[in-house]
Length: 319
Ligand code: ADP
Ligand code: ASP
Ligand code: MG
Image (cartoon, rainbow, N blue to C red; front, side):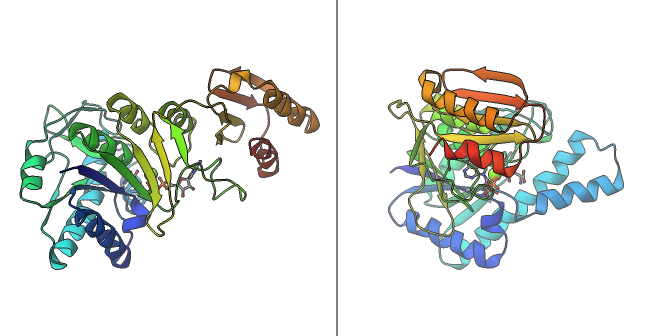
């Protein structure tokens, strides 16, 4: 039987109503005769709130203690979902990072997954249970709880999918895929139906929040197809896989006020496109501090702020 990993982010599990939506999506997949492993984030703004509360207590928080605190958010969401699924008549079990065997490096607050001992997960799947694992957390060799960095549940999900040799890893969030730019910032951003792992790695590392930066790297290494979809509609999402490389510009990312990155395999050979960028730079009299071109990315550091209007102009040439 195929194993499917389904990850739901903070906005997808924010309250009981949304947990019911999530439960129904899981049940649909389970009823297609799949082994289901679910990875959850903390509910809504829980992690942000825990950080603020800790900072009210001390400006000098210890990373170990922060991990102890922040990991509690995911523990709440997994327990609630398991309570709900059991109530709906589906056998399920929630597991923390250490119960799921997720061994990480020692680096609190920014740990890297070193190994996943899947014994417990496999045992529960054999009993046809839906296994619900806390994202973003693991344990280190000192048996301390660690976390993987903000947004790290995506990486937990793909790493678990790799360890289980899962068929697919679904990442559900409030957007129905990866867009040519952040759809909450650029109105006419377009959804991409497919992306290569390397393109997704560039997009994440340039700061687009849609997927955590290490997750496409793990997907690539273990060849796990990653499918991003919305929790709130059934539209087709974006598949991130080893697609045949085509030379189209895929996405634009604004990392901070003055850095713009444009990603797409073969961008270096697209001379017309590079000319289009220079035209915009000339039109707005933008002062560049750095202009870097590689096989799949152009990133430009500007001296001054890049506002929404300029970003939209850059975006218009990739459509
Ligand atoms: P979750 O909490 O489910 O992990 P995130 O908030 O981390 O979800 O990621 C989804 C958000 O990523 C979207 O709401 C969107 O604003 C943002 N985002 C940034 N860049 C992109 C992009 N290129 N395509 C889609 N979403 C993007
Ligand atoms: N709850 C964590 C965060 O808010 C991890 C995640 O959502 O992926 O960063
Ligand atoms: Mg996220």
